Length: 414
Image (tube, rainbow, N blue to C red; front, side, top):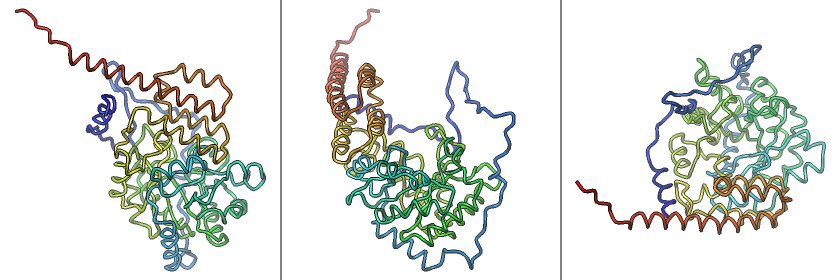
């Protein structure tokens, strides 16, 4: 282990201050704590979803019958009771990257979020955005939509090529607000109920959902989250993934996920539940599963910088085997991109994620790369060049450390 790797390991194992879930990070400047102020519009009105009641499905209309609950668990077992899931990521959880993550411990994967209407309307969109292979299983295909009929039509295109269809009910981005999907459907839960029920009763494979929670600081935040989850189960959801943040908590690196509400949802439902949020390394993943009691978990951002997150053969704390490991992972990914043709915009995004920390050390390499036409060969050359630079960089650091240790102590005369 190099001096750099050892230092990183010590840092990861050192205790850190624990913030209450949902609390933002603060920074020290001039000896005073500087809190980021959230901009609010002068014409802003309270979110309607915070006050609207959660639709209740009468027991006689509920699809959460003992037979369907048993079928949900049978569906989960047939997939292998997967614990470690590649989360759905727009243009980032494509086939090549899913296969890389599967090689290093991921036991299930979601496709990138697919736009239901565009998927129905365009063959070109379908061919580019939905690709799979026999080894790419178990697989959940995620759609965003706000129309039950459009969603069902889209889902029928893929039902023979995946294990389940997932409805995106958690995207908090502005584009989701404009398109009226994702977490912004919390404003229209009747539509959510109808979409889940439509797929549950008319699709040949199970329907799953991924949600965000209601603000827990609100007086009825926990109760509404549990009612929301129960409504989805009653509507026919067979597997629920719960991101322990609200739709307003977009900056995942600044706001902690709330594992307590995820645990409460797991205890409240009868179907399998997955946790999502604050998984920095395998040790976190194991701790999350133990604390929440969930049947599995998802990771997104961490997998983009460390596709070996779930590997039992790697460090539980995410410490790389060697400093140039991100480059080696990139080379493996590029080989998969040749096997499973991948749009260059997706490839480029992964290059920046995997090599991002080293690009800050060697910005000239990044600049030269950005001035070139995007090709697999270009990125392969960049990875190999970076390996040489990183090894030289680490050797120089180690030599400097050894020289400092070998230097004779200076005696100061009285």
